[in-house]
Image 1 (cartoon, rainbow, N blue to C red):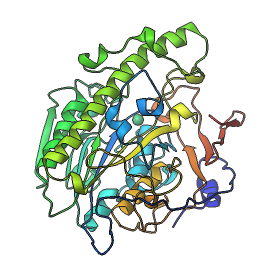
Image 2: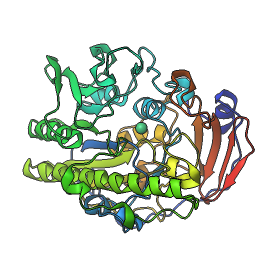
Image 3: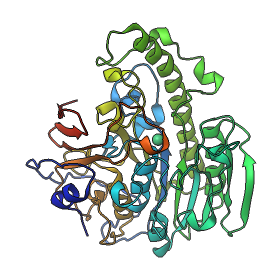
Image 4: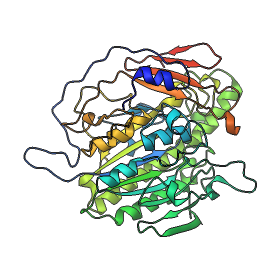
Length: 441
Ligand SMILES: [Ca+2]
């Protein structure tokens, strides 16, 4: 059942908001998703790779006009899409909605909450369609326990039945130490992978695992794989060869960072390392495309890059996320072929409102697969593949059910929030106990 705005408003965390007029794009001439039916020829379904980072705001890409860093791999992926929305800008609820296609209040409502028992994830649907499925990296939908005495969240073992039905799953529940990251899981045969420490910087090591996985794939059976890394999430630590390229004194701040020395000094220091982490991630994304080429799989693979939310970095005097401002909710959403080249536009505008619940049905749709009716998101695959639906969507919902109070995570300034961001660039949000926020940025 699709969620109407009325039902969302009635069942969500707080009051919901309005609807604006919409328009539909006309078809442009080009199309080119691998596996698309062209003319009289029908090719097999494409492989799909999700590259999911943590806390990468869309403003932190050179292809979006940011001159403080260089992201050539991601910049080449900007085409039919550029950005999306983190409708619930916090790890666990975003990832729960991403994996299940359900809004947070029906799945993972807050930080460190668990996915309900029996939840069907995207791996379930891809397996039904004959895909091999693999997951590598951060999970954070199994109730991380940060308070357990003497333990660390990456030491927490996610039991096999709670790994989302992935054929291969090597990851961790949560981790905040990029040079001290421990993983566990099971391989494609179902054999346990014992808990071990990654041998190098997290993004580099997890990418290595994905590259090994790609090398094991064959053209005969399509695969869906996820690379989920924690960078550029804090602590802001990058490999030294990237860190040395960035200096706090030269970092440009967003115009909405207030003229307060302490805030600006902290933002410049954090951003310098943040950009270094993103450049390292960009390099690793390039390694994925190179491996696809070497494995002869590039012509039949689609790679989607996105993040779970952004990072305020001093804007509006805030750090982190959990708030409805652009730096928190605007994420990259980039779709490329297996050579790293953006899929061409086949609509006259881009789906910049694609939300967490929309990514699952859109990914299935890119493979020519229809979504089961219980999913609540929209299938945007018509922006990437001819013959697929182009949803008549004019807005995306924002929803923070639990900003982290229950686990002591959020500051006392974080508030439950509900809102909507519209295609014409407006945003309406209401935060519990605070005045309405109306903004165009
Ligand atoms: Ca996160």
